[in-house]
Image 1 (cartoon, rainbow, N blue to C red):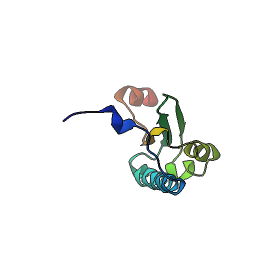
Image 2: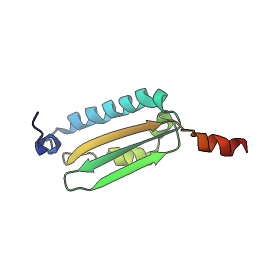
Image 3: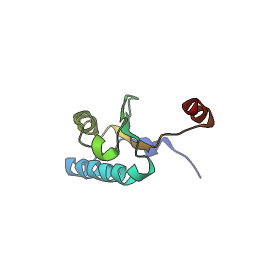
Image 4: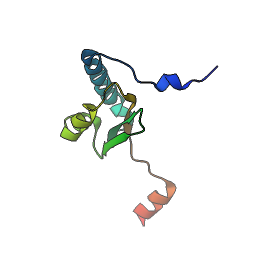
Length: 102
């Protein structure tokens, strides 16, 4: 399979298409909350290499009501090549468990 950089090229989308993609992104983030209820976030990358990350130690259904979340999501435009959502659960290692019981 041949890889090509044009997979990350800017897409010319109408404003209503971008609105739909933002709504779809929020629904997918909320749907993935059960896999990681302790923290969530989003990030985007643009063609010029600029990027933004927003994450908080809260459930996705709380995050989507945060003003900075919507400000960042509102910056998604035709130059955005990657939009990523993230949910996670607290990981407890053996080292952490030992420290917690000491």
